[in-house]
Image (cartoon, rainbow, N blue to C red; front, side, top):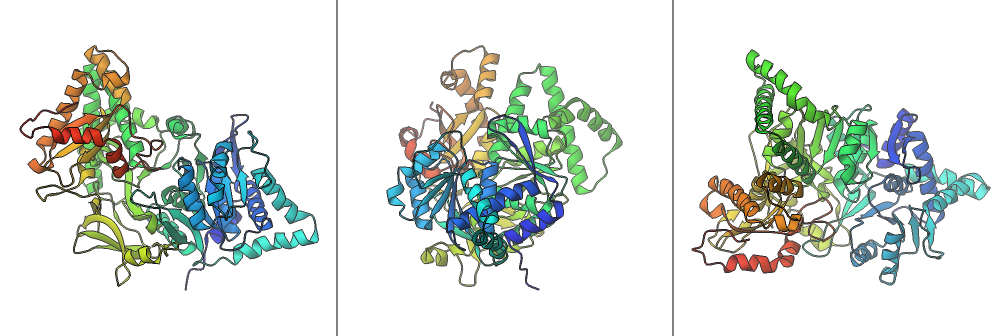
Amino acid sequence: MTDRRTIPSMYHAQLARLGNRVSTYHKDPTTRAWVATTRTDAHEVVRGIACGLMSLGVLAGDRVGVLSDTCIEWSSADLGIVCAAGVTVGLYPTSTAEQCAYILSHAGVAVVFVENRAQLLKLKSVAESVPSLRRYIVFDESEPGPADAAVMTLSDLIALGEKATIRDSAARRTCEAYDVRWQAVTPDDLAMLVYTSGTTGPPKGVMLTHRNIVATVDAVNAAIPLRDDDLGIVFLPLAHSLQRTSNYAAMEAGTTGVFAERIEKLGEHMQEFRPTVQVAVPRVYEKIYQRVLSKVAEQPPRRQAIFKWAVDVGKQVKALERSGRPVPLLLRGQYEVAERLVLGRIRDRFGGRLRFMVSGAAPISKEILEFFDAIGIVILEGWGLTETSGPATVNRRDQVRFGTVGQDLACCESKIADDGEILVRGANVFKGYYRDDEATKAAFTDDGWFRTGDIGTKDRDGFLTITDRKKELIITGGGKNISPSNLENLVKAHGLISQCVVIGDNRKYLVALLALDSDAVTELARRRGITGDPAALSRHPKVVGEVQLILDGVNRGLARYETIKYFRILEKELSVEDDLLTPTLKLKRRNIAARYQGLIDEMYAVPTERRESLW
């Protein structure tokens, strides 16, 4: 029997099942206190938004934009849009006015939700280039927007929806229209347009249907089951498919979500709410790992030795448990001591209740995965793209192979093409690119497999390993194919180095741009007895010498053509605000190369017989 479920039907089913249970926590902007919201109370807002949109003339299939940081209002707006049979178009709050204008115009958005006055004014500055846009709805009501009939607050919209729901006979038909509207949504209707980051040209609008999302949610909850007593913290961009699909999976399972104030508060929120499950991107895990190593480096040598011993014991025990082999009695006793002295204390910093964590959106170092596993927190790495509704593969709790991104979800299948590209087909694969038939045709093989653009291998048990992006593979002047992400992860495994960008396409050798972790640099400076601000410290000969030792160690384990010959240390970390990272913290390689072309040229101007790195 064909599955007729949609996002609205999935939403209303869990509402009927768990209506009086707490759905979310969020901070009240005025009182600064946490607010617990039940599913029934949340539905009053969602229905008010949906009815309000219908009162504004939003029809089935109309595109409605959301420009905001992750917040409870974003999620409510999204559910209101799809329950009104609309199509959600998410925009990253870090996007420029011109980037927003392109997406809104391309999608034909008529109504857009904006987070605050700043985002409103950004859109108003390019209003002439978006002729379809006729209404702005502002989440934050603390700052009045410009006197404009086209601008209204979220409360105004909900009041409009409530008025249309309650007061007169015509409005009562609008109320009835709510049920009619969401129940009329079909699995093949569009649910969202997710625009790619546009690092290689104008962003493309990925068309995801209700069938795509429901199939993915079912497959995720079958592979790594969420429970209705689970709790996780929501902080990744909701304009990205990873967090949105994760939210829908949590919604179906009845999991409670805590909307973080901002990413910098993640650690504080974890200690306060003690999550049981958590989704994040590799950069978050890298930061946590680097912070732990930095704190350990501050300790006396004896405590550092105990930490290293405890983690090593944890690795041995977890490896035996995963393989199904018994843990020897002596090792079990050592593990109990390691738990008491080190491992349990680290877990307590995450709240002490984590069943598992999930990593996606970019590759993560095997060393980091093994470290977290050793302390008793398993990270299940998965893989997918916007075009696959987020995840397509994932490691299961009872089937984990670090260094791989797991096995296919039940909703799809993958295979490796002759040139190494990973191909995917299944119910989670997108419908096509909005208003771009040429790009859609190019994205699929003649027999219907989606060309992911990722290079990988599969073992006999179906575990997929990603080696690189097809377009990001470095081909040196000597014709060698090199994966920059693999090298970058090796370098970033050392706590001193926060970010690494390897460069060398069509060049004789590889070079790297490095950003250092400010806390690790400060601690190194304290130990070495040097002073100065972070920028000055990063260029101090003793710090540079430490970086050189790290690269020398990495290079020793590589083939000659893979080694990094020279490096430059950047004055600050790459950021989303500088347009050098995507909102999910992946490298924008073209932008980085353009921004630091001078430094790159310097490294390639060095006579090849000189072996020392420059800084």
